[in-house]
Structures are given as C-alpha cells and as structure tokens.
Length: 111
Ligand SMILES: [Zn+2]
Image (cartoon, rainbow, N blue to C red; front, side, top):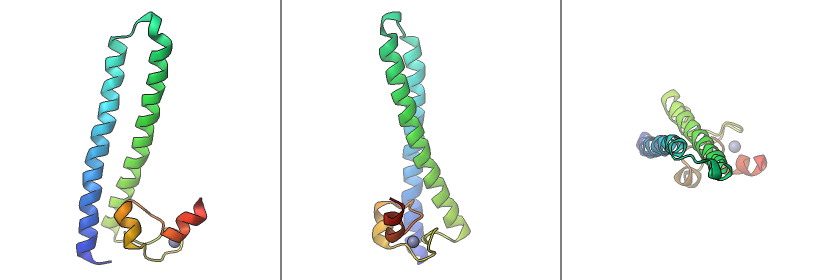
C-alpha cells in the first residue's frame, strides 16, 4: 500500500485512539462520581447505570484494542492486508473503518 495512504490512516487511527482513551477515562471518572452520590434508595438505579457504564467502557476498550492492533500492523508493515484471505483491503472499507483487519468479502463471511 501507498505510504502516503498509510500515514493518512495512521493519523486517523491515532486520533481515534485519543478519542477512545478520553471516553474510557470519562466512564471511569463517572464511576467514582457515582460512588460519591450513592444513596440507599437509588441503589438499584445506581447499579444498573453502573453496569451500563461498565458495558460502554468495555465496548470502548474493545474498539481501542482494535485501533491498537491496526497501529501495530502499520508498524509491522502488514497494514491493509486482510487477516483471513491475505488480499488487500479496499480503500472504501478502510475509509469507513481504518482499524479493519478483514476485507469486505471476509467481513461478510464472518457475519
Ligand atoms: Zn479477505
């Protein structure tokens, strides 16, 4: 893949990584805040929103992991190659999701 293209995707991925890291921090802070204002009556609501936040944070961590792996692939020089069929991943796929490790065909197969 073209080096210029890769560095453009790398930039996107780094921006995304920053965003995800901040989001995860936000959810962790919300957790502490929630503990401070905890009242006995609202315990059920609190624990529900707590598990929602945990679910959100865990989704974000998964996304962050994918972004990290994509940045690793850039470092290794294997970025833009499908992890399953080893063909090049189309630009259209990477433009939408630069962290993709599968081409459009394989994504369909995995569904
Ligand atoms: Zn593929």
